[in-house]
Image 1 (tube, rainbow over the protein chains, first blue to last red):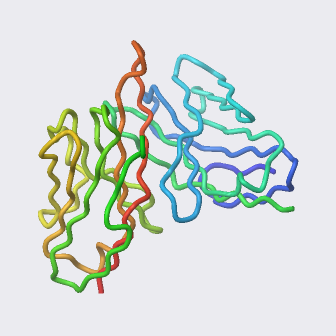
Image 2 (cartoon, rainbow over the protein chains, first blue to last red):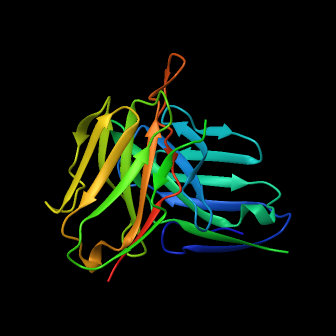
Amino acid sequence: GESVGLHLPTLSVQEGDNSIINCAYSNSASDYFIWYKQESGKGPQFIIDIRSNMDKRQGQRVTVLLNKTVKHLSLQIAATQPGDSAVYFCAEIFNDYKLSFGAGTTVTVRA
Amino acid sequence: DAGVIQSPRHEVTEMGQEVTLRCKPISGHDYLFWYRQTMMRGLELLIYFNNNVPIDDSGMPEDRFSAKMPNASFSTLKIQPSEPRDSAVYFCASSSGTEGTRVTYEQYFGPGTRLTVT
């Protein structure tokens, strides 16, 4: 399944499939990006980050891709599990330590 | 470490009352952030501190909001007087700022305080 930017804030994906969550960021001067996961009733939890001098970074079951030309960020989750159901936020840094968060994408995993 | 600790977890108050939210950051973290989360506006940064000093409070909505950090292990966010539009979840987050010799911007969030103003 795939969501596009902030205009489709929900994503439904079959358990075991790969998920792709997209994010369009606003500031071409941003030099650092983070993906957070927020489960219901909890605070956001760090997933993975990437600096602007990189195009790709991989973690455990997750990959972040950065396309600075079109100011686009994506998070790929491999073999999506029920525990991946949450709201996912991208955030950018363009001024000191101030994180600017996107609106979020709600991911629902179907059994 | 227990992570970022916030209290209370839930607060219900009447319009006009003073509300104080509390935060204990992760020990050793030099940065502390206060955020507000609503359905309409998402996650907004209100203010952040570095070494107990307020660095940027441009996100504080108005003079009814104030934040303090008297020491490295404690911060408060106060709303006086509170209004129904202040109803939201308020998060505190902390960051070390460095990971070894590398600068890190990773922020660790607390569980939040759900504030309801009636």
